[in-house]
Image 1 (cartoon, helix red, strand yellow):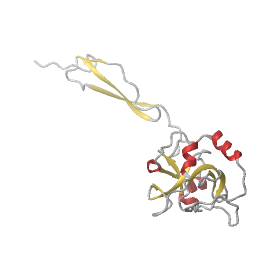
Image 2: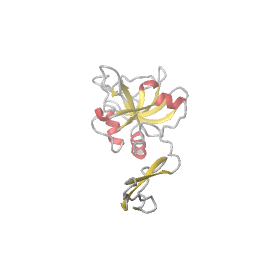
Image 3: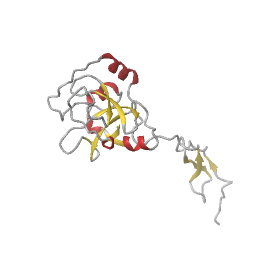
Image 4: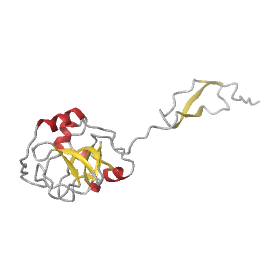
Length: 201
């Protein structure tokens, strides 16, 4: 004689937590007694509503007060000379002002396009770290290191960012900058907004 136990005879554990904190997921439970003839595990859908909109890339922001302090601290009209204009060392500004950013720029990853975001939704939070990437690596191009700064705001033709090159003074620059604009250093930096992306890690 073979006995068949239906679901009403089985004893089940409590439902576990939902597998997500937003969006659609599932909860699990398992059979603890009289399980013959039933699946040992139960699955039930759960939904906590839509997830908040998060920009793909970097949810990281830099220390606003530290950046404002560094920008206000020094005011100069002299131009900082970079020993190697292609080696601007702008990553030091991010390391000093963006808590948690990896000290090794090879661990920085390309997030979203600053130009694309400024041309569409304009949702990049102020004080987001940004930089140039070549083939997903923090660089300007095949031969030269990257150029980075802290995103301030979108502009009509690009964006503004705070940066510091070659141990000079912190400054806010426009990308693209207008020919004839007074720059505080002689470093070579890409003037095309499309070369800049959020920095994520």
